[in-house]
Image 1 (cartoon, rainbow, N blue to C red):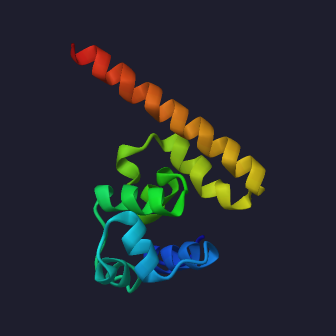
Image 2 (cartoon, rainbow, N blue to C red; image 1 turned 135 degrees about the vertical axis):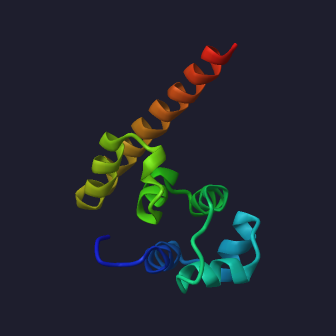
Length: 116
């Protein structure tokens, strides 16, 4: 993962899934030029766009947030683990992402409870 831009990383993920830019855009509910511009590193996607892309690629959004530089909203421990995720087996990555998502969901639910 290191040494490549977010756009290059996204292109690799998309190609690994066997998707064209058009198919990714359609699946994510975006327009084709959005994916094209992101992969060309002409624009930095906003968090909502990253979530749509992660859902369309069926991958954990945390990794995309970190790679895109949105790690200020993510606990540092998660950032460190996400950076190391490239060194894990596919099975280990799935387990880590499951724990990430469960932890984030619990955090968000607890945060909502505090506001009431």
